[in-house]
Each structure stands twice: as C-alpha cells, then as structure tokens.
Amino acid sequence: MALHRDIFWVGRQWAVTGDGIQAIDQRLRGVLDIEIARLWDEDLVQSRRAKPGVNAADFDKALTVARERFPQAPGSDPFVAQLEALGVIEAPVVSPVVPAMQLRAEGRLARFLPQWRIRR
Image (cartoon, rainbow, N blue to C red):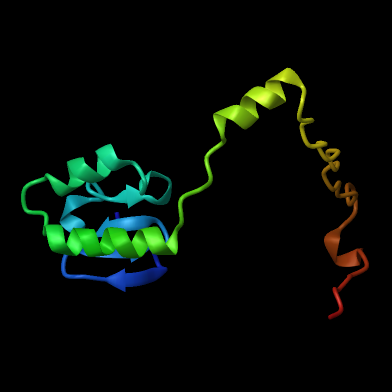
C-alpha cells in the first residue's frame, strides 16, 4: 500500500503517517503496517518488532512518535459500565435523527432551475 499523504515523521525504514506506522519499503505491500487503532496493542507491536529484517531502533522511534501523535483512546472503565447497567448513571440522551435532504427537481430541466449560492 502506498504511504498515506499525511507524513509526520520519516525514518530509515518506518514512517508515521495519517494511517499509523507504515513501512517505507512499498514492496511489502502494507504487510507490516500498523493502523492507528492498533498502536497500543502490545502483542501486535512485539510481533512486528520480531520480524526478520526490521530495524528495531527505527521501529521504536516510529512507535514513540506515533503514540505521541495519536494518544490512546480512553477505554471504558468496567466499574462505570457496571453502574450504567444498573441504572445508577443515566445514559446520555440520543440526539434525534435528522431526515435526509430531498431534492425536488423531478421532471424539470436543470438549466431552468434558479441557482443558489452560499454567501460568506
């Protein structure tokens, strides 16, 4: 897979991009890439580090930069989840669903419809 267009750090073998950590060598076709959601999965990180031919120092630097750039999402606390299940903590109110916009130009030619513009 090609490198993501947003590149935040480039090392000798690894790059931190908008997709997470990606190997610079594109012949690997994204096999060793790590997505943002899996940056904190230690088993995956250790398996990637143990692959033959991986520059461990460069990988560790990329991992450090990526974890600073994309902090870990706060996990749900099991105690809070249990309180919500018991009804002690009320769940947030769900916003109402907004109906989709409907186009009403059926049966008319587009060139005869009035134009509209957004003013800034």
